[in-house]
View 1: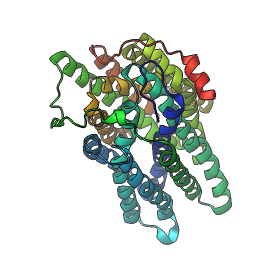
View 2: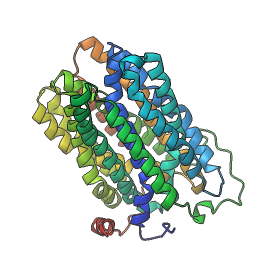
View 3: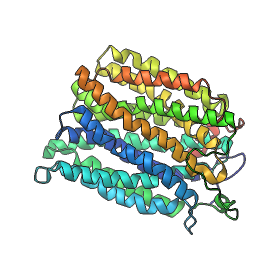
Length: 430
């Protein structure tokens, strides 16, 4: 399998390796949409729900950098990253299918639910960084924004499956059994296993990924980086920006279904379907966002996206209307694509060939650190004010802080490339 070409992205292979990210995004989207609702049946405090929802983020902060570095140093006949995926993904699929059954009356156990959540979230943290590392492992620097666009296109597809198909399945199963939760979770587990089959059959890590195998690898501890002073400053500022914009995004992703059911008076299924609008437009704009970042610069693309989110979410601070919310989410998906697609390549640009997993670990350290703090902080704020309408004010403050930090970033760009977005989309259709 050949993907590492200087001037041309292998779209087919990028799509195939993206199934791992598809499985991860699908699972997390269903998890964030429905697990707060399941927990709300046990716990009345939004802050306590937020505390339980940060378990996955605590594991992400602790273990994702560790497993990223471990995968950098792993050598097997299957590659550096694939062993973690082969072991972790099926365990997660089984654990995920069990989660909603903790909500069935004869198995009604908060302790059992939390135990299954801990198993699922820990194992997810073991294979997420390795699966994300596949793309920069196999893609030249100037093409990583476009490749990340394709990877996130598949991730956006996972989000649409989670919210749209999951919402439809929820409504269907609830109308027949009175409990809509099991079917979306079971569907997700099956899709995760199908993604694993695709990876096992079609993705091979090429020999180019091991070009430094004969050189003893340098022991690198967290933030003991081989960068000059200006590069270190830019790296820390990029990571701070990642912290702030994921603080805003995670609050919306985690609490939107509660916002929609309590403020807009939607059903749980319709709230999930509404959130799918955001994922759908993110999906549509994923590849163009990577192309734009490669052409105008990743930093500029991210700042345009953040400014767009602030402007779009401003009306929702004052207006609680179902259709206004849907329109804002429709447009917001385009802006979020500009931010999300171009951020990971900025971090990876500062890494060496042997440290891609380690630097992606830094990326997830800060994104998951924000996701530890944000649900608890917003939950506390919501408990104090007594309503969910503060959600979009909270998110906008976080996005503005990210813009301020990003202004001072000076590194993280590659040389412009000549790849056409139309060419990439044409190849995807072939």
